[in-house]
Image 1: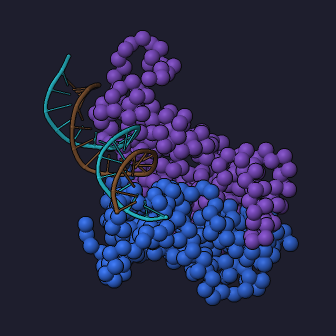
Image 2: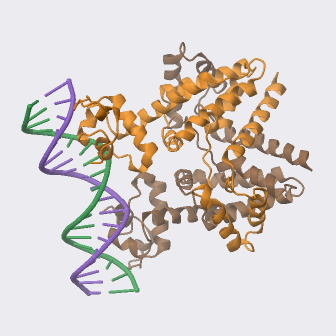
Image 3: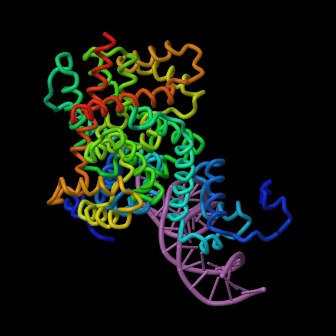
Length: 238
Length: 238
DNA sequence: ACCTGAACACCGTTCAAGT
DNA sequence: ACCTGAACACCGTTCAAGT
């Protein structure tokens, strides 16, 4: 329906054959633009100027599309991680890992839907295994036993890939302040601790450009706390 | 279709009027028994011996059902947390918080689907706010500034409610070992770090009754690491 | 080999009609 | 007031048919 200024349409070849690659790239683009909710087989096909059923020649089913999305995103993560400038893990494993995790995070911030689909995949894809092997490698070079490295992966959880899912995250940065204020109003007497906390937080950030919580700051704070805790256990064990 | 040995059916009153309460309790039961995937309006109605459309007189829509599920589960969490025996937060905030978080965890382990729906609700329900106010109260009594308490909530994330979503969790405890072994086989050369780690982990747990990872052990390890890190920052600030 | 149209079995939800 | 049947607009997916 809506014509897109895609490379394929500009070159006036009416038939660029479909392929798994093209399907997945279209899926990423669709999710980036309209969100995960509007990624349906029918809309994905429409995006490619094709009938929904044609997709099944290149992709087993919708689940396989999600698997493919994970592949694409983790590919980007690996590329970003490999380009990162960081201290050598033998000298400073915390710095080495920290830099890589923050690089991974930047990729995921470009694809806001990615955490949700990563969480939904329980079986480790090859790309995921490759990434985790990389992380364990760093830890080993930093002096971790296999056992402690294993534990470290559990402690980091999704943070190893650069994201955390927050339980309480008001929608947009703009509405955050308004919501926080409205909430404080309603609950000042019943929930004094939270109300005090919110009042303090809003006060600390008077322009409110960041919204109530600066995700990046909180992410790094938590990451550093965890890296420090892991280092203490590593040092204690050696 | 399938008659259930429900209290309502045993008492031979053919008509127990529907209510929001009954709808939500049936929803919890259905999710517990058959998983979140089979919680549809039609099946939920069937569970209650009623037509799907009748539900809409007691619940705005399916989203409201999920909101209700959160309410019910957080109600159970609050009840469990209030019964917990723990040191007073003034004397030992780590012990006080730790005991409550582990109590919350026990509730969520009884409702395996609960983490997924908690994650999907971004707006804080009243029950959620009440729980978080409780946690912040503990931290305050333990000597935290509002600011550090705020940070602590972010670091804890979903762990404050007793769960973490693991990225890499093979399905059942039984299959975990087999999968791990099969994977080691396949990837010993390409992913030496992970392979070594898995070999070590399997070796540490020779009976394998726990599967590859003991979730409870890992949860407590991570929780203690985080609590310790928070205490260090609290002590440094005061 | 690749794409399609019609169809099937499911969703959530609306609406007018029943009691 | 509470429940229902039929219908609508969507899903993912199958299958036989087209080129």
